[in-house]
Structures are given as C-alpha cells and as structure tokens.
Image (cartoon, rainbow, N blue to C red; front, top):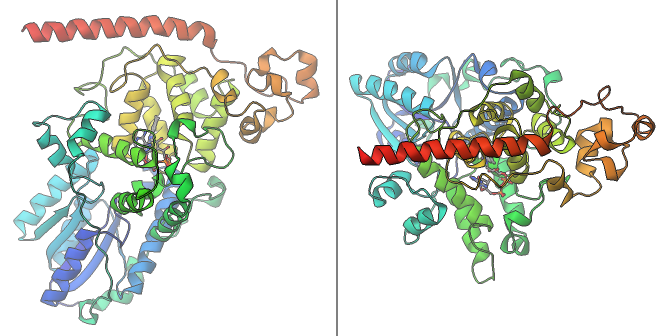
Length: 500
Ligand code: FAD
C-alpha cells in the first residue's frame, strides 16, 4: 500500500462533477502536492431499511453514473461500506488522509455525523474544506442579513436576496494527473454495489420513469430549458396535478441528490428569461427554485425543523393517532379515488405533482384524518425520489397550516379539486384501475353509483374497492373547529410569553 498522503472528496448530496467546488478543491490539492486523490461515497449496510426501494435505485444509478463520469477524467468513485462515523476514521488512517473536502448539508442526521468527523479530523491533523453548494444562496448569509433570524415569509426572503450577486458555476475541464492515482485504483473492493447487493430484489421495483444520475439530470434540464416559451409562461398554479405526463419539470430528484446543481439551474433560467417576457416569482419556474431556497434558509436556521415539538416556527396542534387511517392513506385505500390515485402514483413512480402533494397532505392532516404532519412526512421520506429534509418538513408544515401558511379554513376537497383539471378521471383510471370502467359522473365519488352501475363497471364498493374511511363533508368541519381551538391556545400562550 502506498504511503503517499491522500486527499479525499466525500460525496454526499452532491452526486455530480459539474459545479462542485468542494471536489474541485480536492483535485487542486492533490495535483498541486502530488498526493493521491480518492473521491468516496459511504454506503451504510443498513441503507435498505432507511430508504425506500425506488429512491435506493435512484441513488445506485446516480453513483454508477458518477463513477463513469469520474473515470472519464481519469479517476473513479471509491465506495466505502459502513457507517460513516465508524468507517471513516479507519479509512483516514489506512490511506494517510491529510485533506478532506465535502459540501455543507443541513439534514440534522448529517450535521450530527459531521460534528463527529470534524473531531476525528481535528485530532488527526486532517484539513477539512466545506463548501456551501447545494443551494443558489449561502443560507447562513441570508440569516445573518436578517439579523440572525429566518425570514418567515417568501416575500421577505426574496427581498433579502434581491441584491445578492449569484456566483458563477465552476467546471472541471481537464483530466486528473496520472500520479494522483492510487495503487488500488482497479480494486473491485470499492465498486458501486448492484441493486441486489444493497438488498433490493427486482419484484419490489416498478417502472423506472426517472433514472438517477448527473447525466440524466443535465439532459432533463437542457430539454426543458430548450422550451423557452414554456419556461417563460410557466405558472405553477396553472399546471395540472393529475396529468398523465408531468406538467412540471421533475428536476426535483436530481436537485435533491445533487445530481444537478441549483446554481446551474438558476443561471440557465436567467439566460432563458433574458430579453423575453416572462412570469415572475412566486409562480414562475425561477419562483419555484426560490421556494427551495426559502425552505433551506428556514431549515438551516430552525432547531428541530423536522419535528413539531421544540420547533419554534411550528404551531403546536393536538393531532390524533389512527394507525388504520394512516395505513389506508399511505397505501392508497381511503375510498377517495383522487387521494388514492395520488398515493399510488407516489408509491409506484416516486414522484407526484406539487398540488397533488397539497391534496394528500391536507387530507391526512387538517382536512380529513387529523393525523400529524410528521407521520405524513415519514411516508413521503420513504416513497419520494426527491426526498429532501428541509423541503419535506417545510412543505408539510405549510400544508398542515402549522407554519408559513395560516389560512387553515381553506381545505382541499378530495372530490372537486381533481375535477378541475381532469373531468373524466383519466388519472384515477390509470392509478386506481379497479375503477377504470366507472362512468365519469361517478369516478370521483364511486359510492354514489347505484349498485347496478357498480356491478356493470366490475367494481363493487366495499368489496372490490374500499368504502370511504371518513365522510369529508362532516370531518372537515369538525377539524376546522379543532384548528380554530389550537390556534387560540397558541395565541394565548404567545401572549403570555410576551408578558413574561
Ligand atoms: P418544478 O415546479 O418544476 O420546480 C422546479 C424546482 O423548484 C423543483 O425541482 C424543486 O427543487 C423546486 N420547488 C418547486 N416547488 C417547490 C416547493 N413548494 N418547495 C420547495 N422547492 C420547490 N420537494 C422536494 O424536492 N423534496 C421533498 O421532500 C418535498 N416534499 C414535499 C412535501 C409536501 C407535503 C409538499 C406539498 C411539497 C413537497 N416538495 C418537496 C415540494 C414540491 O412539491 C416539489 O419540489 C415539486 O413538486 C417537484 O417537482 P418538479 O421538479 O417538477 O417542480
């Protein structure tokens, strides 16, 4: 084994070569000092129990693509198997690591892990370079500009970044020097694991609509940016939650895994908008990217952002518990076809439209089932390809009217909402095939169909498709009262605090 010191770039939520300053720093350091360069990714052996099969497949595909792209510049990806806090100290010693780079992530688990690794590096004289490169703006600077607190509204956030110049992106344009290769460069020990090796069997997986990886992410971005008129007239509220083909970009899984740089997305959007008449935030495509920035700032500056208790921005609401209802919701068996279609699409494909997320999140929480947003967030974490710690928690708080949004009396109807963009229920017919032969007039409310119609359509409610688990008309009114009471209690508590 070579005794030359090693420079490590630790990939986490930055699975790309483009616009990766931390990786670039590692390459420069290795080349300047003629040290070994080892880009690594740590795979926890228990990963299968931590993330759903579809997201795990996306991750493995992204790692395969990253390895291929690194090989194109005369390097490779080294997969380290184990828990980061246990295996990295051993690797640092074994490889004589002197320099470590990685990006700054804000997921609370990663933050805890970083504190331990920082300590190990400190004790072993390993120089650590951390780069904020998952967002367009530096979220700490935004918080600082707002006198140390997070902006509580989107408009406030926009005003804080209005005069901030977004830095240019950086690229890696040449091959890495031959002398930076290690003797174990060809070793199979560090290969990207196959799906089988991480414990996924094919039968768990459904159609792969959105393959993972930087190459795919950049391709998707470029395809959308080529549609200039579409980009410039984009208005999120006018996109459809239930179109068969997505009505928004589906760039989210690529941004969440860092296969695509948010800054590259930003600059491309600016180029497209330049000289064109275009829509504006909050509804424009740039506005969507800014929502992402807004939630990153909020997540970075709020303790316990992914929990209700101990979270200063989150209204405390006495949610109930009902495991049967939670499971019915998660499995797409509530008896409300629109809600069920959305949850089944999510489980099958790993992505659903933003307004579809609105529908099912409202239904689970303040709308119908009165179950905590934290439970819903866990199900989303399991199923979403684009799962993102701050975006998921922030949006769940919004939808449950726990933070950022307070018009709790605006409740989505599981019957009327979907009809606005899909009268015939084509989306329901695709994802809830039991109902595919139902006449359009009953597709959103099959329990209203006469028994004879149900039999002719081949689906009897209560036998072939579930009865409604709640009566929306009744429960949403009861829940409004509960929200009203919870808001009153919170207001009183705040007033008391102010007095003290
Ligand atoms: P586009 O409309 O094409 O927007 C482009 C990009 O802007 C997205 O890729 C995304 O990065 C960002 N963006 C768009 N809408 C939002 C938003 N409301 N908040 C923050 N960023 C946004 N998004 C995630 O990436 N990960 C999550 O875990 C996640 N959980 C959510 C949970 C709930 C309950 C809700 C209501 C929304 C959640 N979102 C989450 C936000 C949003 O629904 C998705 O980002 C969006 O639907 C992704 O599709 P797209 O890429 O086609 O979006």
